Image (cartoon, rainbow, N blue to C red; front, side, top):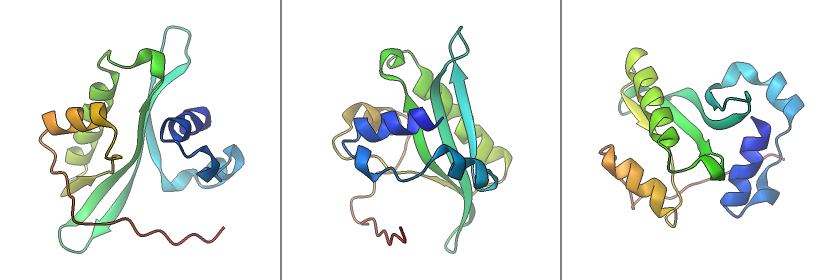
Length: 132
């Protein structure tokens, strides 16, 4: 999974921003859940990492932090499969909202999310306060 996270950071042109580590993920594994897709050789080729949150306006929700498919396996329906799995998990757990982010230049992802009926918010900005 960590290699998938690194690959996503490279795709998003920000590999230097990954400060997490395998050992940190092992220590903090109670804070996230993940669906993975493996190929015939049992290599992870896609993943969707998520966690539960609470939004005061709607209540219990889910945040999809990473949805990534290895480059050579893209355009084969794996992203759609993972997104369907996440949506099903959110509904099964009575979540009122599923939220995630997409970079404004990632047209293929935006096209996929639009086909699912997602609202793209152009009003809100990300605010990050890092303690590392």
